Amino acid sequence: MLHVENISGGYGKVPIVKSITFSVNKGEVLGILGPNGSGKSTLLKIISGILPATEGTVTIDGKLSTKYSQKEFARKVAVLPQLHAHAFSHTVTDTVALGRYPHQSGIFSSWSDEDQRAVQEAMHNTSITRYEKTPIELLSGGEQQRVFVAQALAQEAPILLLDEPTNHLDIAHQQQLLDTIRQQAIEKELTVVSVFHDINLASVYCDRLLLLDNGKISSIGTPQDVIKEEAILNVYKARVKTQPHPELPKPQITLLADSKVKIEPFVVTKKDFNITSEYVSLQTKHSLKTLSSAVHNAGMGWYKAFVNRHVDVDYACEDVKLEMANYLEMKNFHTSDTVGMMTAVLTEHAEVEEYTGDFGSVLIAVTAGIGNAVDVSQALKRDEKPKVGTINTWVIINGELPDEAFIQAMITATEAKAKALQTEGVLDPLTNTIATGTSTDSLLIAATQTGEYLPYAGPITDLGKQIGHGVYDCTVRAIQAYKAAKGWTV
Image (cartoon, rainbow, N blue to C red; front, side, top):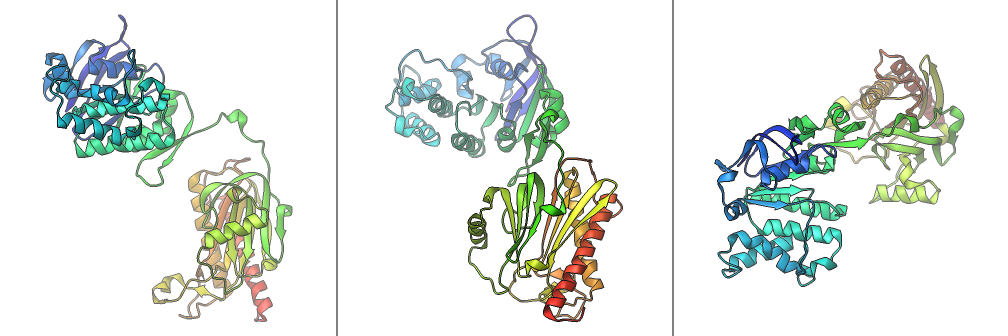
């Protein structure tokens, strides 16, 4: 275990790092973050003994680091510095083999099978085996970095100190290298302390983070505790937005542009919609922030084209997403910039309307059929194959919404749709109870993110009232149009 107690020090009389205290356990990865000049590399150099501490102590496995001989310390601590000097020409293998120096009793006089295994394993883990006979000076900066990481790994010290290990590496090699270090920490119970510039990488690969600000600890803890918007603003002087990683319970940040470069306000109007027998489409001047359950580009994103496409009621396809993408390309919709839905309803019966409030306006577009209506409370009784969705709802908001308002808007719209089905007396044909929707309804909420800031979208708010009224109104009209087309009594 590594314990740093009240460490201060630097290059001159004025310390760069001041009163730093933390511990790192076996098998744990601690990431050090901070802006340029905050003392990240200096702290690592003091821990490794390259720079003297003016105050405080470093303890390794219960023993002060100053009590170890140079070779004993090297058996305990492997260091990857930020800059590497290689005045002499060595092959890659020879460079990595230098990491075994602490384990030698003479100048490679005791080279063993264990040394050979450690070198070969380190080279394999960093994907540099194919360069084994290449002089290191002939490698690129990124390739050289992987060689020096391999050298540190070959040392097989229980503590690994890394100063920006992904420096010069492309994203694939960053991932591979950090996966390797993380795996080594777990399998061999290494204690790893690493300096990072990339906050997102540090969050993904570290158990805990230490955030430095002007040589002092601003915060230390799990990534969730340290990577907070206000903390990043205070320390880095940069506006960011945090969001969860898509696969891990770790935060990620997105840098926010200066407010001066925001797009000029614009609005979407009813005239921007195009209704044909093939699809309902909307194309906007600028991208809208969008949350949807669409077939193509579902989830949260920014898009400027929206398509609700008519398909036959017996539509069947093994790869619906691929077929939909091909269709959009054929119709000259840019697939990376378009949200695509499908409906078995005739799209010329779509209801599109604009609803205005004190805040601005909301546009609602609904295609609604009730041939496969479902009472969701009775869904456990159903055992049928899914069908193409028949009620698709778009809510386009001229205003700026936070993420929570998007979710509230979805709830409000869904409740309004269910009320419209009740008003129209739509029954689930299996249970003969009032339907709440159809088997595969789809919903889209999109906002211009310009104009008035609208923090909430529940039914008590002006925005929520217009969404509720608009979705209800358009859904009722769309259901009535569907009934009329089928010759049913309206």
